[in-house]
Image (cartoon, rainbow, N blue to C red; front, side, top):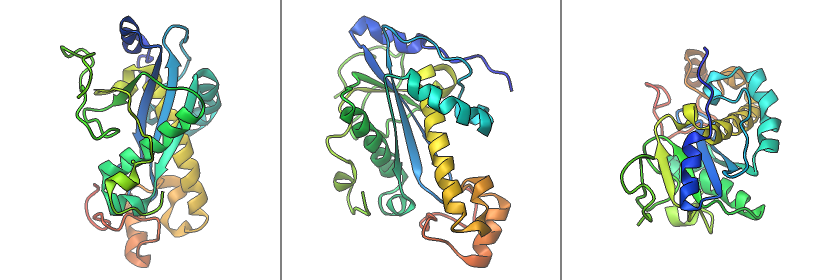
Length: 244
């Protein structure tokens, strides 16, 4: 499939508000039956960043292309990170809080590199990265108005690593298709999660995670019926029914 290359045009609209470092954020694994949910972050310098060829939303790229691009994305971005929340955390917290946990783990890696993004661009229509309501559409009136947390924790507060994301978060539907910072983040998240699922496949080969990466294919569900869930399955989900 040939698609128009994502650019930094949306991201550069933040320059007029004095934003230099912007973090593009995307997740993978949200709909899988097994394995973690994974969040990637790439930080760009809006005043200096050039485009990076061939990067697209990770779903549109072949595995070999994602592997080739992953080190290029890390070298291109000012800072980058990937965070995970395990299947047990998803069962304990729910998917949205698990996404927030994974995202803030990645965010804290960025802070540890000495970079503090001044704004976040998140793929989708819902801000799962921070608990407070924040702007949802890039070109909505008042976009730049100031917007009003490891293990198996039992509460959201204990789940989200401190300090957590305190930058304003802006969501944009299909940002991974049109915004280069978000598309690049999707590549990092997809590559790292796929590698993890490949390593888990060697432990539980019957489930075919080398191919399905934990998603609910017919072969995966049949293996579940024959063998039952592993410690890496999201047992709170409808493992034997329709995909979540």
